[in-house]
Image (tube, rainbow over all chains, first blue to last red; front, top):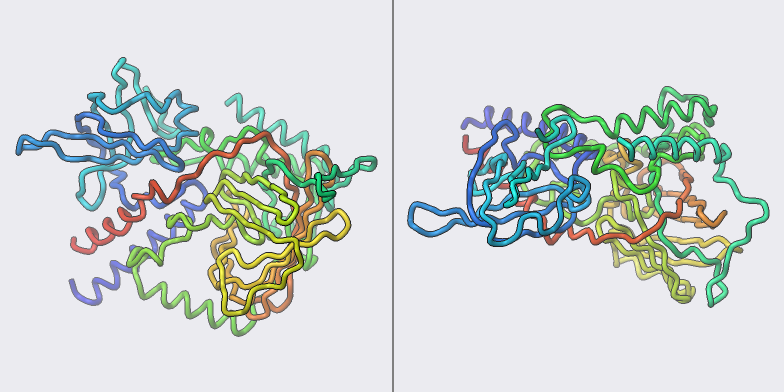
Length: 136
Length: 324
């Protein structure tokens, strides 16, 4: 990448950062920069752990890999406060549950992303979607 | 929606009930005392408000709203806080911004700042203007995620700005608890689990070489008012401001000096006033005031740092982007 192009990219990123910063000030704990918000994927695995903490919960999934083992995938979710109002409890999904997670992937290519929704073992849809996109 | 309706109309009642100007004092009410004989400020309090720190241009020359204007302004701010783009799938603002109390309750003033009389932060000194220009230039030359220290103190789980001083509220969870031990007053904030311990024993401030993000506070009683004098700041004090009206652009220097006054004016209200001076930043001091309103606790743990995988992923996403 040329110096000039790099500077242009940096300037564009700075602008994005500035906008994201103000947006974050209004509505979020941190920037959405880690996630590819334009993509939605699904992956299945076994719940390894649920970190039920403010301001974001994290759900860790063991996902079978081609070598016959498992990879650890991590998904950032909403706060317990928010999820409680959406009908979640700290045991809605728990270690050992086999679930498929719909997510927005990490932009760095690592195994994980932003948690969007899943189905609980009893078949209920557990969603973290925003108010303009209520669960079906 | 039921919660939102509750919130708005409760707030409207609060607007109607509170007198314009300074936060009102109930005529026959007297403050309770702790076992040590101190005015009792203890309990859970919120400094949530929709009054902007500085007077907006639309209210220039007008320091107090009519009742109808105050209600319209409150509704506008609540709608602003609860609105979001259709692409924002992560947050449902109505759900996660709602508290168990009216967030927008306010008196009818158009700015928290009452001195200067125009409700505006005074102009920057020439030295501060140079500092601001240098910081802007440095920010322009680097990427937004070149290193963790260039991200906000909030994203780094260090401070949301609400601890202050001055305490200016945050985007959400504007909840704090005041405790009195006799020798100290302790202010515990939900965000970011920030705690200020304020000695009352008259000891002098620490030496000038010791610098702290929240400064070095000293408390004393002036009648029934707790006065807290804080010095020994760093140059990183975050000023955030009320929800939906945050002001990450305000900065100060290590010579910041803040004097806060806490006066309990009713069973449910503390009048919170503060004066900020920093001769290296503003041409004159400025003062503001707001109500701290009692609410039923508890305050939940905000384990921001423990779960902060997000900061690392912000940096790694930027590195991945640079390789493309």
